[in-house]
Amino acid sequence: MAIQLELGRSPTLRTLVALSAVAGVATAAGFVVNGCARHAVDARPDSSPEGAKRPSNSNAGAASREDVLGLGRVAELAMPAVVSVASTHAAEAQVPNLPFDDPFFRRFFGPGMGPPFSSPHGGGAPRTEHGLGSGVLVAGNVILTNAQVVEGAKTLVVTTQDRRSLDVELAGADPKSDLAVLRIKGDTNGLKFLEFADSDSARLGQVVLAVGNPFGVGETITMGIVSAKGRADLGIADYEDFIQTDAAINPGNSGGALVDLDGRLLGIPTAILSRSGGYMGVGFAIPSNMARPIMQSLLETGQVARSYLGVTIQDVDQDLAQALGLKNVAGVLISDVVAGGPSAKAGLQRGDVVLSIDGKPMNSSGQLRNTVATAGVGKEVEAELWRNGETRKIKVTLAAMPAERQSAGPSATSPSAPTQFGVTLTPLDGTARRQLTLPDSIKNGVLVKDVEPGSKAFEAGIRPGDVIVEVGGSPVTTAEQLTQLWQKSAGSVPILLFRDGHTLYVAAKH
Image (cartoon, rainbow, N blue to C red; front, side, top):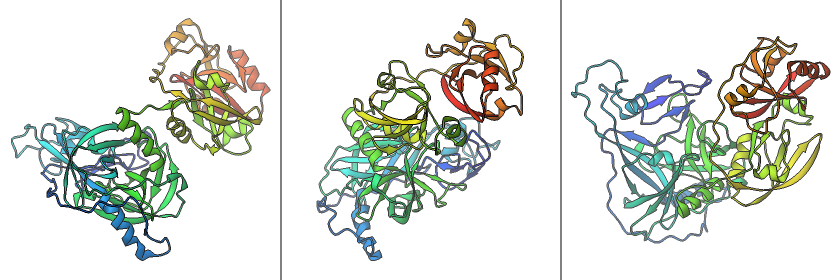
């Protein structure tokens, strides 16, 4: 049962458009993010252990990039290291009539939310679902897969290409990156595994192969190229830095392998962009350089300890770049600095634009977040910044990421007269500060009660409930002061807001 979502129907990116009986997959904003196909019938593969030669870890004799016939050699290296992962899950109460009888329909809608049809089965009796996904052997007893493949599983059975059934245990899962690690408990003699490639060195147009178990039909290999790198902010996982490929990836490929022409693991397929629930030429894989440290952390501690800078960040668009004096649309803007955090101690400031970390250009908030999170707690990184029209470099020692702070709620006080800027404001008295849960770092500001449609404030993206903290770098405490600052400014002006527990910048044009 594929739950199909179509792009462009809702800004929430969670709108249900159609249902199609293909396989048990869930999609968000058109992304098939549950590649683990779940079926109501018992589809476990047979398990008849057979002996196999212990492989060499060397990739000597891997395919020549100029010789298409060498692809067969790459397949011989990669396919034995990719396994099928079968799972069982407790199903909810039965919903009648196919295709709505599919367990994934019940999982999405919940009990009592199915179509108004009578049940030919008597209805209501719980049963067990079976899921199928993929995994890849990356060490003698370690299997790397997607967190979605093992999520909520009561039992897990791993089957190799030569039909050996492996007894495994879950070493750890990290839903924020959609990665999980399984540890083989039994004999590992004769198993083959893949070496990690350097995903940072992958080139656009590079030929890659995707290996997995699509739709549960068995091990399958497809060919494509690296279509793009660094895909982030797609809403698939909390931490995204995907390799995009046009190698055919379908439900069931999730957790398998994306390999280069040396037969090395370049990424873990995790999602596809689709209007139909099936392959449409746009697939995404977690890069090996992101997966490897997460795997190691899960093996060592069962969880992932991420590092952080201690800043609130946002992307830089054309208007902000112009307002901040940047020559190009580049970098990531710091809209707030956590008091006592690593950045505050190092001297980073609100309004700084992070151009690079350790020489690696930062082009999006997602890229900066991933780079910092995987760098390691206690590591010193060098941040290149744009500040007040010039560049500078500051070294920051990263700290462990603390628990997330709660966002602020709405507030309301007595409004003042509308300003020329197009906003009706109220002062930040003690009551408003408490209702908004303003941090101590916000010393001043005015609360936006209303925004006139079509005004400069409206066009800049300012909305009721925002707190205007600065205009053009100058603090604002009254409506009169905001009007004066706005009248004195020209061109594109950066305006600092406090919204939903965080600060951010918008650019307002005269």
